[in-house]
Image 1: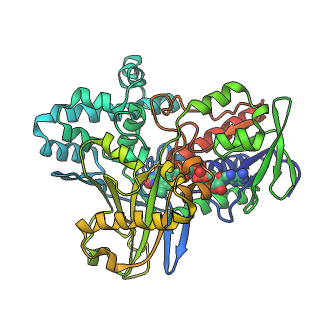
Image 2: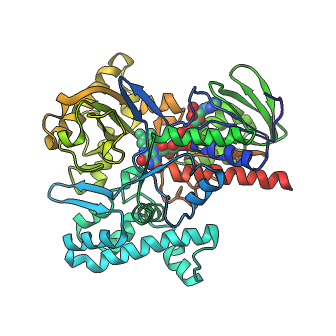
Image 3: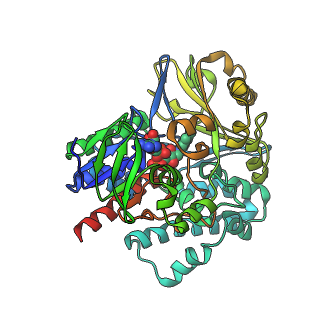
Length: 497
Ligand SMILES: Cc1cc2nc3c(=O)[nH]c(=O)nc-3n(C[C@H](O)[C@H](O)[C@H](O)COP(=O)(O)OP(=O)(O)OC[C@H]3O[C@@H](n4cnc5c(N)ncnc54)[C@H](O)[C@@H]3O)c2cc1C
């Protein structure tokens, strides 16, 4: 290890990996420092018994394997597409409400058709919402790449006049049926806020990307993708140190100067990309007294997105034997998404259960004759914080029991096939990633912190940049990889000056 680099990247989550790979590919000397012994942050796996579990990825957005645009092009340029292979999922989701059971395919015309079959009186509204959402997605592409061409009027209609709107406000203005409003918004827990609070622009981009490009899984799970990034970094002369956290970011006169690792080594660089959440970066790694007040105020007044509980289950039977036909099923106890959001505060109940059957995407996800089923529900960190540590394990097991009971209403006898189970709570995620509250998205996707108004990739000190869920364009696989790319491009531009 040298004692000076063009850039140091702290944290090997997707944002950190993408930025280090971009820097190395562009010929810069780069050092990536990660506290854990494996890369990826949330984009990794763990093993229990004969099962390897995916920690996070249900569906990846932004990968159009046919047209090879956007994220695909970037991954191809890096050489990642040669190493990581993706599984295309046929359907975006199956959603089960009190009296509606609907499956939305990953195809715009087919999705519109199915919705119109269910809600024929709302045909015009359905078409309008799809037209708007897809065009909002194109408007963002236009702003970022200049393609496809868009007139000022179109930009105005599809994006600029909608920037201060929630998804709920826009949907409600075109659709009257409460049940249809709920069905169009099924994906919201992926993005942490219900329709009444979530940025229209964010939800429209995400929905049109999932339906238009088709959601993806990764053969070999997310560890394969994270490993592919590491290969690119190392093959291009970058250095990666795992099991080596950063204790301090050194500064001088409002500029970053290097880092001190948890092992006490001092390494110099005038460019640091932090994939560590901006709160810990500012408060713990730099020190409040060295960060401008305006930045501290900005992060203090932005709300942190919620977390979740996940029960990872290795089953001794195949999906077929368990009677599970879908990759992912959203069970909603009500059409009222605000009520569902509120239920994240309870430890003894939830109005939402998400069941993911990974082998329906990749049949080789687990050993032959077995399957991996994951049950998830949104869960706020607060009730977990106030659970005494002596009661934590019991509370976590009770929560998992509640999720299994809910799943058994649809798949009786499921529990008899559980060979291994591991449960992760907001506390687990927080401990693992260092993200406050165990959030999977960073700041909320409210109108205030939507994709265009989110915290910049440029940090509050000269030479400091951010990559990852908390900054532009946001949380999730596609956005975090993009944020890493954007942060690296800023460093490259700065170095070329
Ligand atoms: C259960 C779950 C399901 C999800 N499902 C999906 C999905 O289906 N689709 C999707 O697109 N997204 C999904 N996400 C969200 C997605 O995984 C995250 O938004 C994304 O992976 C976050 O990446 P990041 O770059 O912000 O880094 P993080 O994953 O937050 O990683 C940060 C890294 O920094 C390291 N670090 C922290 N402090 C230090 C330090 N001082 N020194 C060195 N290293 C440090 C940590 O160890 C960690 O490796 C899910 C997340 C979870 C938890």
